[in-house]
Length: 374
Image 1: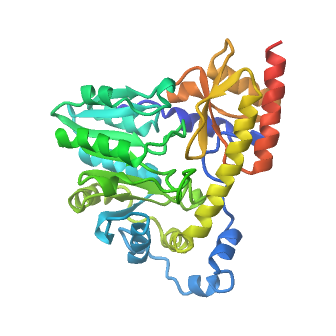
Image 2: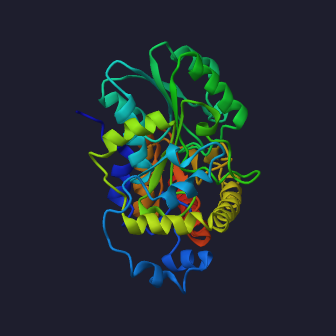
Image 3: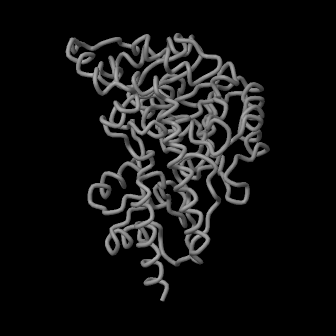
């Protein structure tokens, strides 16, 4: 199997440990173990919980406690609809591996997380790209989606909230996509790792798993829950698909680890506090970013309505990689070049980090823009 290099991951691996201001990070500022224990009220009893644990493989598909906690993030899911995976990256890979065969049509939005078009392409699928456009607020054109779907369409893959634009499809738009998928009996895979960070309501837009009998939701503890170090994600999907995924999962996962499972349970059982912290950080930092963009004549964007990232358009005659490398070398600020997202002319910013890091980093970017534009 030949597959394209994973552009974002290669970029992150190359530079994220050497920058001063990491504005490429896409998680809400990570929690410390101490913060998690304080929020959950477990500081005084955690050792008593951990010391008796025998470190076996643990529950292969995820503990009942964990899967029950995950179901609370949905409206219509049961424990049997949930499978625990090695992050959302593992969840996405397992879905593509289970569903896609050579010749199947897969329709993927772009930009999105590269897994969703490069993996099915590597399996010999007929991958059709639905380009998200700035003039449409980076929301999918449903007429174009309709044209790309045929009777052999196996999967439509979307990302909501979207990475890297921060665009959010509301429930009514999702239901219209469901109608298109149902007409050709296709599955919909929705990568929902940023779900819970919406600017309105309780922060949770509808999940595709709750809206469609062939809807598949993938998510994790990494982005909205600020616990990427747990490396824990999940699939919410119809039971018959979960059973098929388990066959593939047995070959590459076994279990996610007892400590990961235990700490994820602790976090999900105090999810209201964690997600309120995440939304507060996103809202505060989004306002900082918006004010900065309005004051930078060389920068424009479609303001994100959810998630932790935004796609910034720059008015300079240079490639996005050159822009990002020169910015790193001169100011220590790290963005992600649009070229690794197949969106040349843009850079991606992760703005949900420490507020002081964001403010200082943006100040350095302003200095850089002033220097190179004169």
